[in-house]
Length: 159
Image (cartoon, rainbow, N blue to C red; front, side, top):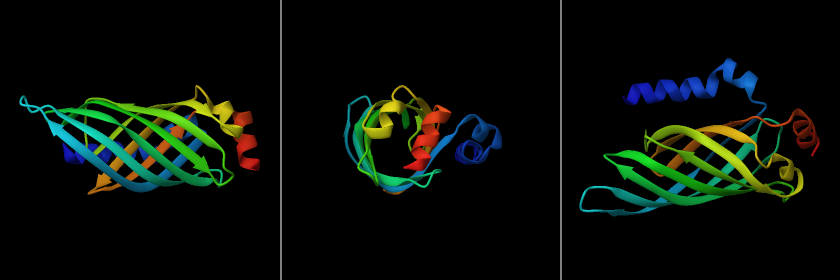
């Protein structure tokens, strides 16, 4: 199973077929912290937060902070819902919701959607993305690929 996750992660990140469908890509690294509670029936709830530094394929960079709740049943994330706030080098912010389900915690892929933004990111609201994350202890590595209007991409590239 571990090898299958690595293969799926590699395909998601490097596939030229996926890259042609997505015109805005973000990658980053950060640290994650959790507090957990385990019920008598072995269901586990995590309060999760992370701090991330990121760059995009247009030369922008910034930092993000995410938090949320994760429900784990039999070592599989049954519900994984996070909200993230990102700020770029110009002070523009965006907020996105990230979710994934039925996945192991050490690596996985899911979906996100931009829910609010300032500056150029106002035009991202409603944009849908896919993301993948891998963990090494408390460090996380992620990539996100989004479908963004080409005119918005041009504006963001000129920032």
